[in-house]
Picture (cartoon, rainbow, N blue to C red):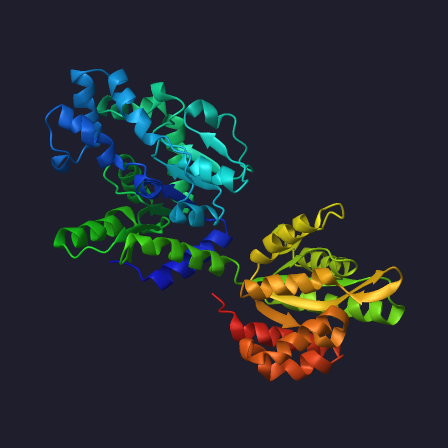
Length: 455
């Protein structure tokens, strides 16, 4: 029985935020990069030994037949040119990697995953044999486990039936790593057909020992009305604990992955602001307001990010950290992210960094926004730019206009176009004029309650 896409998105995003997931990428994903799936990879060698690829279910056995007639080296030479690419234009793969999995498992030989991570400027660690496992640091992010080996080491790839039969002898530690994660994490299988025996054997063994107490997994498939397909996905769930997520067409997958990403940042709040040495009264108001606001957000199980704007970042970070420690929460960086700016950045780099920070959040709160330029107080252009970025990204925008400066300018712009911010309409009088700190904080909490779906 398949699970609805909405249920899948909600459950998987929750587990992703709690670091309880892994992804398993099959050859179906690489086809977006014009790389072959296993059927296309072996089509020519099947024809060369007078076999019809459409009648082949076991590609390892096909590869064994070919290498028996010719040689293993000839087999490898025939497939090598087909699995090389520098192309990174894969909507599925790029949206998948935006989810920041710590563990990426694949049966693919190609370097499509590595190329896409490199294009995103994300460091990674690649593991394609048991020796590599001795060198990994589990804090590294992410780790790519290449079960069948890697194009860079053709001597040790798993390609033929003989290779497969020797797998447990060649890579016992990697198999143990896979089994451990299949027990502890929920896997998302994508572009993977389950035609080889490796994963199903592991899942079956786990099912025998832990029964229904084990983690359930997800696999994305295109809908198929054939009765055999219905039996197939029913078998995956009952005997391997893999729930099918059915899509109308495979091109729907990138959008589903985007929705998962948006769900993972649903509770993330970016606080934008700046306050130079204005006066003691304003500073005290800012300190008390942000202390109250930070605690209010954290009590609602929301996560805070601040770019550490002058004074504002300090007023947010201090009470946030103290609150989390008082609750016995030691993974502080999961709840409050402090991301200072480097004053030596160029204007272009500042904008790029702001885009990155805001993209990681769903809600943007704007307070104060004041700086001195040549001794003259001005509205902060950086805070105004962060508003423009947040608006362009369709973030939930909450300007506390009563704090003045850039926040007032942003509030006036929002009020003038309130039709674009309907969630603020019942509250804009408070946001515009209120100076009672508790009322402001409760109002901000109410706005967030009205727009954020709590899972």
